[in-house]
Image (cartoon, rainbow, N blue to C red; front, side, top):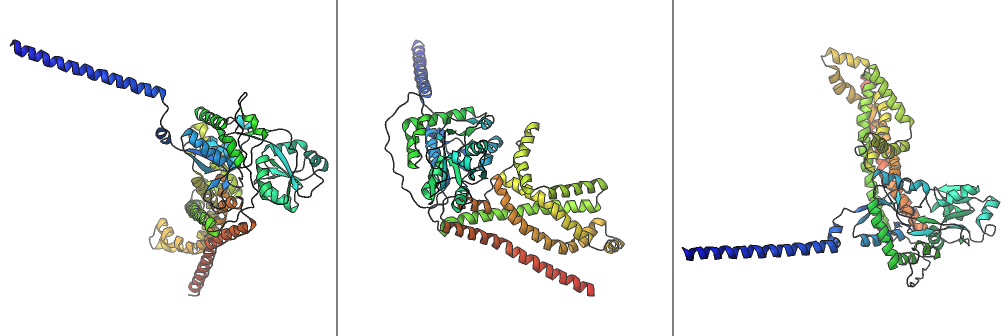
Amino acid sequence: MDIEERKMRLRWGCVAIAVNMAMLVSLAGCGHTHAQTDNQQPSPSEKVSLPPLRWGADAEGGAPYIFYDPERPDQLIGFEVDLIRALERELGRRIEHQQYDFKKLVDGLERGDIDLAMNGLEITPDRQKRVRFSRPYYVFKLQLVTREGETAINSLRDCVEQRARVGTLENTAASRLLEELGVPTFLYDSQVTPFEDLAVGRLDAVLMDVPIVLYHGRNKPGLRLVEPLVSGRGYYAIAFRKDDEELARQFDAALERLLASGELRRIYEKWGLWNTSQEEIYPPNQFGLELARQEISTQPLAGWSFGSYFPLLLRAAWLTVELTVLSMAVAVVIGLILAVCRLYGPYPLQLLALCYVEFFRGIPVLLLLYFLYFGLPAIGQVFGWDVALRWSPFVTAVIGLGLNYAAYEAEIYRAAISSIPRAQWEAAASLGLTPMQTFRRIILPQALRIILPPSTTDFVALFKDTSLAGTITVVELSKQYQILSTSGADYRALVEIGIATALLYLLMAVPLGYLSRRLEERWHAGHLVEGRH
């Protein structure tokens, strides 16, 4: 027994030693793990796993900020594109571009369509009330441009004294300055058009931010850049939602690192945008080595090949077809319901249907699209329904166009159904058919002969009205043309792109017009034959 007891004690002693050693190893490993966690940042793979950030910017006429590469129209270039790629590397997180109208960037942030807006966005008091700006990434000044050989205008003061016609972009520092000075001002949506109007003599001068002037001054002949620059300065910064403070701080830190490493200056020198004004974005008492300057050669506008831009137009044309078909489907369903309510519903229902028709026929489609896309979510926030009412741009366009065209379709259907003789209702009743059976089997099939030709005409009109969807960031055929035509192509390519866009519209619309005429001729002839019998 003593021997067995000693063996048992020895066995349990070995087990205890093994358990204690395992615990020590485990504690040591945990301590090492905690030390790693405390001393190391999240790995790049952990950062990449985060969802990509949505960067809102307008590529339409966006040079040199962001625009399509004339040699590869499916790729974006510009100094802000280079800056975004550098920020991606600093943050270890993907940033994806989302086409957004420049004038609606702040609204897009508040809607949640985009996570950040960077598109030469100026820091202004009114914008600061709505968004959280990052630290400035560029200091801009204003410069006056006139035609080559112009001697009467040599300063902004000359423009004031001579009441010169000056063009600029709307809602910019330049437009506000010209308004304060009382100069006759012409406001533009695109930064390309003012220079074209200046070249043909519609304007006496153009006042723009220096980055825009430098780009167009190098690429457009016949322009004279007036020196010195206009007094004063402004700042470009990245805009975030007010509640995205942590994200904004990450971008602030990343911009600081790019500035300290010299990467920010290298980007600006690559695009010929570095100047002494940029010294103001450096923090006080921060100095560094001089960087080698890159010579920027003046290059003419590039011509685009048919194979480079046509696939983009085809994709946009297909989106236009989808938008038209779905919008018309909404219009047909709602229009038929409205027509039936006006003809056979009780008086309150008839009145509501009439109010619908008059309301939607009386308001512009563009106003309706703006309300559905920007106004409705704002109203929904009051009741806590903003998520349910925050539709995508495509869905908003389908609903908006469908609601508008439903009013016109309803009147077509009502007139067609009313044209069927009352005697046919009475004949069907004498045969024992219910009113629903009479309408579905006798009245509606005959009304379709009258309905289809004008409805086909409305379908063609809807094809063209889809261009309004571009105002809420839907890149349909017309919007794609606008983007391509303001992305730095030469005049030959501009003409080709315009002709290709017009031909695509014709290929979609002309067959429908032909079908409408054929149906009208065939069914009208059928009615005449029936009348003779």
